[in-house]
Image (cartoon, rainbow, N blue to C red):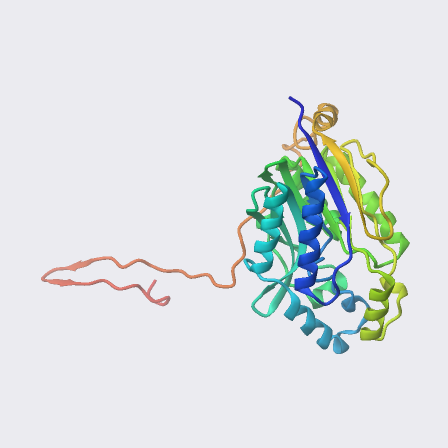
Length: 333
């Protein structure tokens, strides 16, 4: 039986400066797509509550207020917001990939959340290296999320924005057998050239991975651009253009018309037999690879800020004396 999945790449605006409002808008869209028979959807990078456009147009010493506002509006995992998205995914019977600013203590991370069709959060991965200006805002992720995961619609991999310029990061997902790749970008930034670059990188990944790529960028309307410009004292031009929301087949061809402006969806049927057709002639992690010549070493150990080394107690026997052992101090070990 052929496996065909109806998918949607969603170009959508945030409710600027509002975590609650943006989540409500996303959950409404999920249920709307579910009624159209969509079973997989990708939403833009850090759409919750909004991408930190301010970090691109403000120098470091002036962005404290905007950085603080983003921290306060970022979501935590788990939270009422993640439960709301999970409930919407369950109601729509849809697998959902959505980008968020995730707050962890006093830090923010560029996080991709993947919800299965039963509403379960099956992956939470953080962008491994924030790009350029983003490093003033986001912390670094680890290799734990550089893997594809099984879902109700197939095996899903996720990367954010310029992570698609990292061949080894992409190969980690290729080798892990992704069938649908969720690509997220900010949109409404960097101008037309960024739109062209996004098209190149998504189509190239589809070709190399022999999977479907569902790519989403965000959209800022004129009022939102004006608001950000007013709040940051910057020009509108740097936060314009750069949108490319599309679905790409395993042979690198676009399915349907991509979106480069406005809100909307690109919806297409993904026929998994096309994956087999592409891999039959070029399987980058199979017959076309030469692992004895070139291979990838990856550390998927989750990072931790605390590493405890505990030496368990043991009994110490000495002639004529019995005493309880204790854990050795670092100097004694």
